[in-house]
Length: 103
Image 1 (cartoon, rainbow, N blue to C red):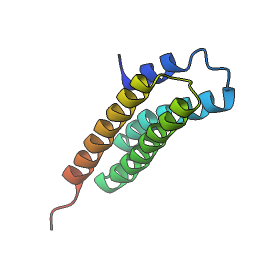
Image 2 (image 1 turned 135 degrees about the horizontal axis):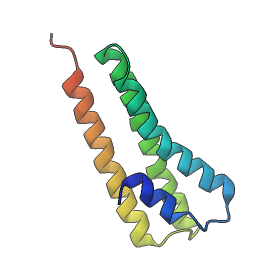
Image 3 (image 1 turned 90 degrees about the horizontal axis):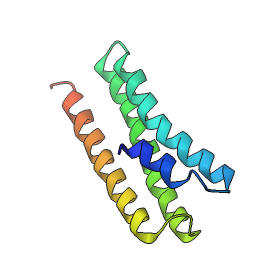
Image 4 (image 1 turned 60 degrees about the vertical axis):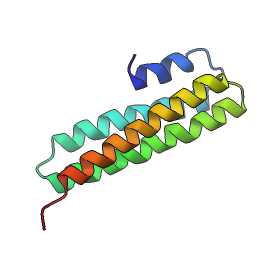
């Protein structure tokens, strides 16, 4: 299952609609900003949108701490999703470094 699909699955029955909307929106933002940046005209613009995506991934990671505290998800799910988020953050960072202009 994709990272975004897991987010939707984890909170499909969540009654805290503000929380559910925020974490879903942050997850969607990751995907959409990568796509938007890819369609831009330069690596510099792409890096900018990747940076926004990385921030949104961090937001999702943070929200899984809240979800765990509020018992919206089990500790095991929260730990797994935070690990997956960190892997995505690391991958985005690596890609941003790859796109850096040569000196």
